[in-house]
Length: 346
Image (cartoon, rainbow, N blue to C red; front, side):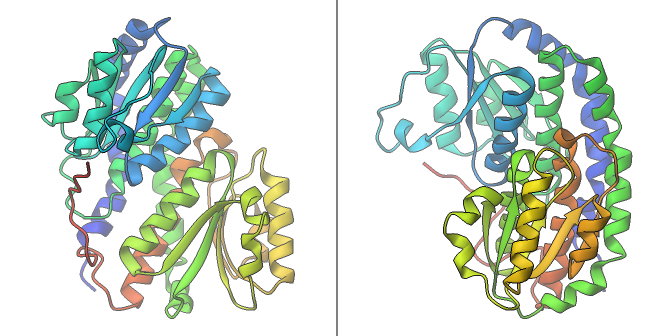
């Protein structure tokens, strides 16, 4: 079978992350120094995969930097033309293309209100980059596949780098620098399990669960499954899932869990037990051997990785699962139905 563009880009991610870390640390240090003391909370404008990266920032900046992070509501800035006050905020726009007018509008309003603005973007000549006070490029080269992969993980790395520098934590920064090698190991281990994905060829819906730092991972894996395989994949935190949606579980219902070890481990493990009693089919992405043994399909992660960095790893098996599922359904992963690479929304 010919290698798809998407597959090529999935496997480029370790080198992209390495490049971002090599090229942007000095730039990020200067930006953090300029921003020091200028804001007390963060507003992030993003769509699609970039919005999922913003979910990661909510946990990361909250836990490591004590900054509340709000996700912008761009329609207030465009369709309703009634933007909220952004007093004391740092405005961040995250985008692969930097083309979407509604994301640009949030940063434009931030500048009108005298707030600092930062663009995390792959296309440095884009309207978003030109609007922002500060820019951190993603260095992902041209992302040709419609479904974003390498720009997503590059965005996570930039957010993690900014967090490390804001808290002046060189140990965390060193941990971040170890991620390209661990990402490569994760990809290689996942490939060994891909023949088992054929088991899910006929599924038409599933649930994807994560919590804490990997709440973002659940959303991103669900998005990839929907984009590529046309399977209706619903993302939830393990806590929210218990508040009603667990009622959908029946014998054979597929549940994908992003479950690296960490503060949420006990909660996730308890949910796995409950789901098994209800008869669910479980795909588990984890570094916990006991948890993987309970899975119908276990996708292993490297062990002893700090929880705050596991989203860079846990999303990779999800990307490859979505790719392999798409192939098993006879669909073209490089040309998802109804999608284009650049989506411009108002």
